Amino acid sequence: MAERKPIESWLTDMDGVLIHEGVPVPGADAFIKRLRESGKPFLVLTNNSIYTPRDLHARLARMGLDVPVDHIWTSALATAQFLDDQRPGGTAFVIGEAGLTTALHDIGYILTDAEPDYVVLGETRTYSFEALTRAIRLINNGARFIATNPDETGPSTEGALPATGSVAALITKATGREPYFVGKPNPLMMRAGLNAIGAHSETSAMIGDRMDTDVLAGLEAGMETFLVLTGLTRPAEVDRFPFRPSNVVDSIADLVERI
Image 1: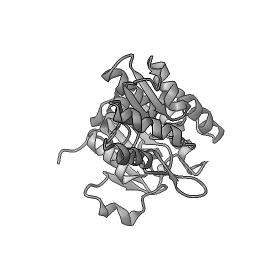
Image 2: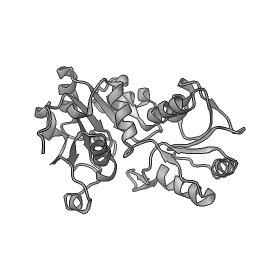
Image 3: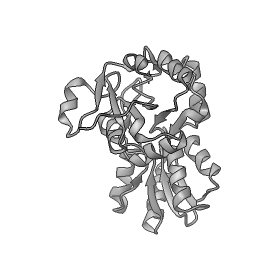
């Protein structure tokens, strides 16, 4: 196997890597500080579409992590970019929060429930039965079905929460239509992120805590991958997958000296 080129750009997941249940992972502040001082291109990614990059910047800043707004890449932004490429100036019926609706407004989309081009499903803590019913009927009438990410559950201090993937499955069951998922592990989200910072996969690394999204997305995008053990994946689970990360480390703290 050919030896990989030195890492010049870094992409990292947020939950489970930099923060865990609302508190910073030890070493995350040193990692971000080292990245910023190095001048190397980097992005903090999240499949969560609830928040805008400005929201996330403020939330991270309160935890002592100074990540500039333009270094945050969400599945909502990736979804908006995908729709702008596919059907510029289109229309969409959206189930989601400000992160998604703002991203779609910013590309000039009209949000409507009157014969929209797309039904776009994102993350929210208040899924409405009325909105889901409307989405099902619009898809049955010909609207294309898009979902920001396939995550079936999300973390909370009280335990797992149903996430976009679970709600998408409900809609699929009612319509017989599968959504196109834009977020991880779709390498589209990674490639769009790399393009946004002018990076190339051959000299980029992806850090994540999930084999089925972070590592798989990095692998399929042609990047070097690092699995950290501060999130969802336990060491014994790694060998259950038919693919492996390039590296397994205990936490983000172990990567500070790699920058």
